[in-house]
Length: 141
Image (cartoon, rainbow, N blue to C red):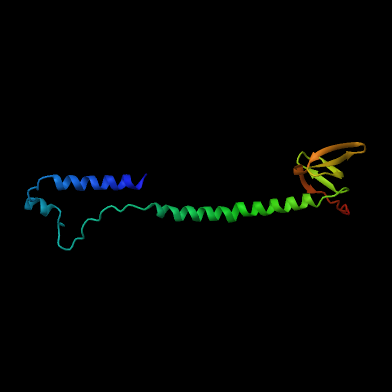
């Protein structure tokens, strides 16, 4: 809404009140209706309207909670993953999103050439790398 529009509406009723002839004074019976029933009773409270800023604070708190509990840890994990992918070189054994495990033969700018089996070489996007596979020693039985 435009501010001049609000002022124009607020000024219109005041102008019409001034142009109207003076009204007769209110009857004493009408005046007693607005007074409290008992002398010790408090006047009826007018309904209070909440400002838009009252809802802003809880919304900001919820956003901050989501940021620190969900968004920030995910960004940190993605940063570590990108760093791991950038450090990969030929000879590393990696796991891909499709479940393939292979050995890097050649690292290019946007892809890796992977050897899945003897003589089977495929080219895979760098973003498909899930993790580096480390060969652990078999457990003794």
